[in-house]
Each structure stands twice: as C-alpha cells, then as structure tokens.
Image (cartoon, rainbow, N blue to C red; front, side, top):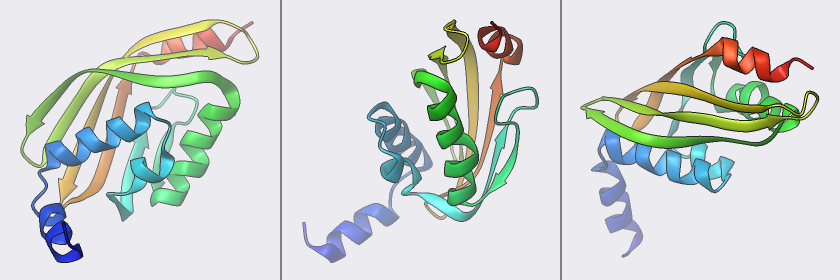
Length: 141
C-alpha cells in the first residue's frame, strides 16, 4: 500500500474503527498508538471522584494527568473491553478496570463505560463513567 492509498484508507476510517484501534493499542500499553487519532484540542473527562478527575485538554495533558498517574499509582492498570457500541460519531466502550494499588496492595475491579466522540477521523471528546467508590476503596490501606 503506497502512502497515498494509506492516507485514503485512514480518511475513510469509521469512528468505531478508530476507537477499536485505540483500545487495541491500550491493551498493548502503546501510548503512542492510543493517542494517534486524538485531536490536538480533545476534551478528555475523567469522572469526579476518580483519582485523575477533571477535563484535560490535548493529548499531552491526558498523558501527564491520566496515563502517567495511573501507571505510577497502580500495578498493571488496564481496561478490559467487553462491548463496543457503534452509534455513528459516538462510540461507547463498556468493560472493567482491573489493577492493584501500589500503596494499599488491594485489587481493583470496577465496571466502566467510556463515551467517545469522533469528528473528521479525530477523537474530539472522551468521558468516563465508573464506580469511583470501588476505586477509592482499593486505594485505602
């Protein structure tokens, strides 16, 4: 596939395919792959009550305030995708967060839903919904 064909293929990717690729990269802990289709001005919202709570703007803020924090505080922090729902420009990922908290040693297993918005083949918004009480309980000695 030459560069031009590859560009055309990429331009025709559905929102569903873009999010599926994000989760595939996430499963391999490939941050570069995870951020490949994230817009420069993405609005990435971690739920109030979650350790990384807030709305982060742009890929670097997401890496610094979400992924690096989770990697520092948790052992083998991961999202296990159970279902991916295609709703056009909106895609919903449902699954579980699994990890072990470094300080408390406690295991985490919490249900989660991610709501993604894609525009012009770029992820423009992400919002997380999870059981923040289960996350908090795993963090307490």
